[in-house]
Length: 339
Image (cartoon, rainbow, N blue to C red):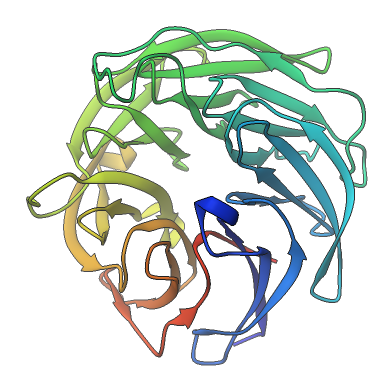
């Protein structure tokens, strides 16, 4: 196996025990090792990498939030730019062409697009689109809470709003981010993360209902129709279960979700050419409070925030992961992305 490296985002200060962004190496047996601090930063909980691979972006997840850009050099990160964000930015993604960074501000409910130069640096000021609405859960849905972004094949930017039970659709017009539609989801479900399947269907993991919704584009992704819904776990679980991350595997044959509280990673089989999902197996996450997960061919790495562990799994031919090796101790890990 070729040597690979990963970046790990963490919570810091009052939010966690991390110190910033870490760098780890994947060993020949698939597990992660050689933890090193790549840069000190304030709660860089979610990361994204420019398509060129030479720039890493992080959120600064705090009330007076921000996004930062770092140049990569020999496993270290050097800040090359920063921009203000809204309250508690929690997710970043890069447009496929590398021209914009999409930021979801959980606390303020705003979505912003930061223009990037050809080398991945920040250029100009962000476009900011306000959120709106709320939901029936008074403790979590008192107002809009943008949570994640994904990119559809036609260039539409899709974002989830946990507070308003919406998927919002945006397009770039003359380089500016413009809202073009929105899709209402079941009240109180709290959509968190989403993924676009090769078939074109959109899979939305809900945090509050712990379900996975299948959406079909109805108007060039400006509007979507919900066509299926299934549990986020294969087996019923006691107590509160909060959906966390959703990722595709094996070219789209399987979907993987993580669930906090239940502390499991669930394997979902893709059915009907992408139009439906069936949860087939729950696998213990190997720690407490799994957040992000990364699927890397036959390997999966899961960030267990509250137990300070990155756990590696090997995915079998039937799509089900099994833990391998010794977990790597990482303080308050949240996000894992390939370097």
